[in-house]
Length: 121
Image (cartoon, rainbow, N blue to C red):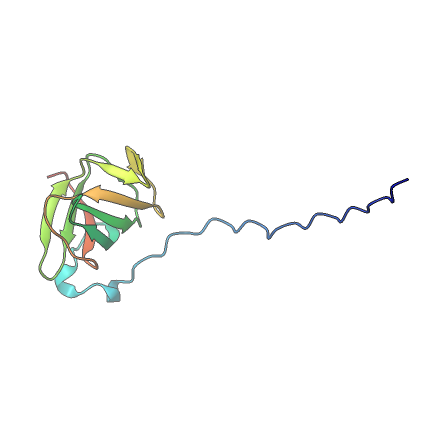
């Protein structure tokens, strides 16, 4: 006869964290020449991929394909319409605040440039 094996109780993992609100960029973190009064700040450019001409951006406001955006930096001033928007590897029509997105841009931009939502170009 085999000895009975006592089962250990399953350990529960940590409780899921509550959804975080997106970290807002402080006005003091944006140089005066990069600020646009009255336009909602979408976030700052985290990365730029020259091969695909896409910027990576942590959204602070919702963004939809067809919206106008302005990328403003010390050496950058670009206004264009959002033609393609990706979350991860999926193409999407819109993204919410707090998501990390890739947006195709027409010209070179630099990490740290401020991105604003403006009227469509």
